[in-house]
Amino acid sequence: MKTLKFSYLGNFSHSLDAAVYHAQPRFTEEIAEIFELARKYDLRIAPRGAGRSYNDAALKGGGIVLDLSLLRCVQAWDAETGILRAEPGLTLESLWQYILPDGWWPPVVSGTMKTTLGGCLGMNIHGKNNFKKGTIGENILEFDAILPNGKEVTCTPKKNKDLFYGMISGMGMLGIFTSVTMQMKRVYSGLLEVKEWNVPNLEAQLDALLEGAPRNDYIVGWLDGTARGRRLGRGQIHAANYLAKDEDPDPAETTRVAFQTLPDTFFGVIPKSKLHYLMSLGLNNLGVWGVNTAKYLLGRNKSYQQAHAAFHFLLDYVPDWEKSYGKYGLIQYQSFLPKETALDAWTEILKLSQKRGLPTYLGVTKRHRPDNFLISHALDGFSLALDFKITNSNRAKLAKMVQDFDEIVLDAGGRFYFAKNSETSAETTRQFLGEETIKKFGKLKKRCDPENLLYSDLYERIFGAQ
Ligand SMILES: Cc1cc2nc3c(=O)[nH]c(=O)nc-3n(C[C@H](O)[C@H](O)[C@H](O)COP(=O)(O)OP(=O)(O)OC[C@H]3O[C@@H](n4cnc5c(N)ncnc54)[C@H](O)[C@@H]3O)c2cc1C
Image (cartoon, rainbow, N blue to C red; front, side):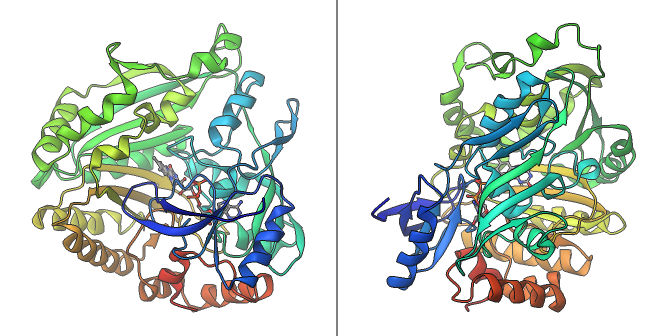
């Protein structure tokens, strides 16, 4: 790789783009060359996996975006133990397709399979089983990384422990993951046993997550952000469990990749690649109210079996669905609240969004547990992710509203997730993380990256210009 290509790159939700120097190494050795180029031309670097963060995490306007998506080899796979070693650009899609035919599934996955291992570690992602399996970092046995200070390190929960817990969740600001070793989860079928039921309001929604989590392998809620009054926060819960050994009469068939793959047409007619055009017609306050009301009223108690990929990656069913939000894209606001304060704080947030005429078009709730990573978003409570459409006329109003949300979340002892939120300020970050965590992160940063080469737009926004 000899040159840096000048390019415009955006974020997943099409709400931001930046003019950058795009570097795409094909070999790990080239990463050190990029650090050299950055020094020579006084540029800063944002690492990038698949660019699926909703915000500015994988962007550096005027700097280098170090795109690691071509480093994507599986380096070792043991189908007996379920231990996999791979380069950081391997996507979760390639990963599950590689291991499922051998009867394994990734222990933690995001709501899209397009993310890379490096990006998932950078943000320390969670799945619909966070309450049970923790974040992805809790399932990592070892990783190798190259640091801007020239060192190459191997980290495990015991070796270079501070780097292990700092780099996983460190938003790519301490070093570059070059190889990841991870324990997969044994499965005896390509199917999950799924239950689905309606909940009439936010209180019932949170109760269902709390009571349902210990009895299920996965649990997640859909929240109708347009419902008001005593129906505020109503929605649907989906809970799923693995099938036990011998429960699936034909596991060889259900674990085939072709069995999992989502169909090409919707209702057997509309090509799924065109579906986002159709969706865009309904993406306004009235349309979303209509669709949500119908979804809720048609909701029934149901049990069925569903392929792993269909359960986890529903959003991937419609390719480019984010484009249905129009040319200004969307923002996602995800807050994490202790179980004691979640109901009141989210009631306030949902009411505020309705009062300002900016209802969320998609709400998702999950159950979480705390973890030991340095920049941790999870806690003993719940998360609520809210999607908002950006238009030319609502942009400023929306930005102000999510900053108001931040105050409500801080007051309620909540936490934020830097893979999603696009407005959280340095002052809010300081209050959320606390002086001690910021100091610890700063110390690691100085040790790994004394020249501040790794420096994304997100980093500057949440820690202030350095
Ligand atoms: C539809 C959708 C659903 C989602 N669902 C979930 C969910 O259920 N749970 C959840 O937790 N998140 C979820 N996310 C967020 C997503 O999982 C994270 O933003 C994830 O980090 C994106 O991975 P990526 O490979 O695209 O990384 P990018 O967005 O490209 O980068 C993410 C971060 O990792 C850093 N990074 C990337 N590669 C490396 C590397 N090799 N070394 C060091 N740092 C690196 C980047 O600098 C950046 O800070 C979802 C996103 C989408 C679009």
